[in-house]
Image (tube, rainbow, N blue to C red; front, side, top):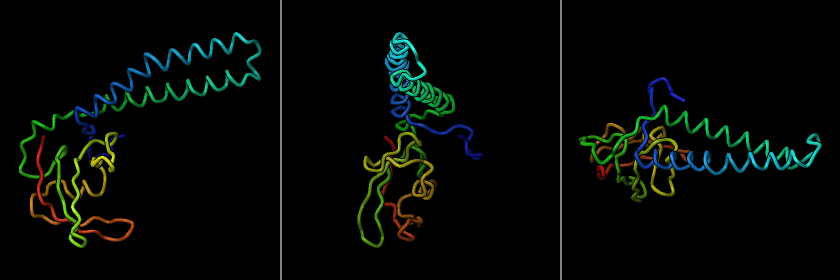
Length: 162
């Protein structure tokens, strides 16, 4: 998943905790339950035309795939305590307040890891066009971001780390 410029993808402590919790649930709850479902379906006899068996095997493959995916992400993560960052420019983990220079609408975002991104909750991926434009900038700077509706210009009002 590394994109050539980053050996490890940054992730907040919160993002790591969420992946750890999902992995724990998959390993301790989901995996054992699907194994039991497969055993029960096998006990019914002929598995060649057993829909429950096929369904359980598909679910098992999805669970095992997600376990491997999470383990890979955790292994390739650079976990960062954003509250310890002391930077005079915007970097990963920053809480940024910007204003659309055309509409004067204000937005607040935190620059987070890929798996943590949720625009509706104010968290944008480090790899998003907006975050990429903001990285390295400071209060008062203006950035231009390409959007489906054309170029948008934002002015940075403030940023902080917490």
